[in-house]
Length: 219
Image 1 (cartoon, rainbow, N blue to C red):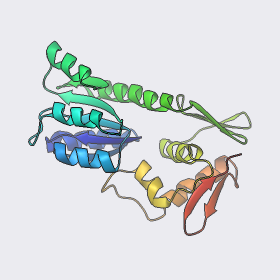
Image 2 (cartoon, rainbow, N blue to C red):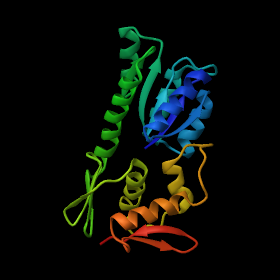
Image 3 (cartoon, rainbow, N blue to C red):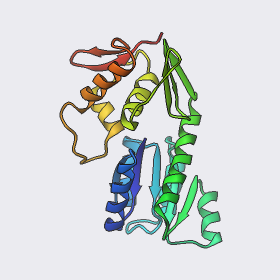
């Protein structure tokens, strides 16, 4: 799950990034509204956490421009503006959720999990390819009816492949789904995840297209 954090308080942003990455989210950060709009237009995240008090433009203006664009990420407003009128305005302008500062991290995580379920619900909840069944809502995977436990990143990698059967996904595109900008990534991280998935699911389920990337068959 790719999150874009738009927050100009760098100390808060650093703490949020660390906490969210510990929970397995892939998080990128910008501190200006214009930068956020550029990223959303070119590398659309699943969820945007948007502060309203940005130095270059009001967060509500950023929200308005996103909703007028061709992309449609889920948007959580994160702001010190905590009156009922502020919340109503933000939600009426297209926000999916609104969390006032100060907040408790468990509440933010719970709200993000709820938004994550909404992202998955837009797509088919259950994806079946051959003997493998992946449920995007429950985060469960089974092979021939047998439950398989997967760490979050292995699950997200398998989900990305199964949502694109027959399509070759490059290592770089898979890394972008699993890791945030600047996050330390070993040169063979995707290969290691693929190796573990093959051992847990089936050796031939994920195919390597040498020099290009990875794919799973449509049937």
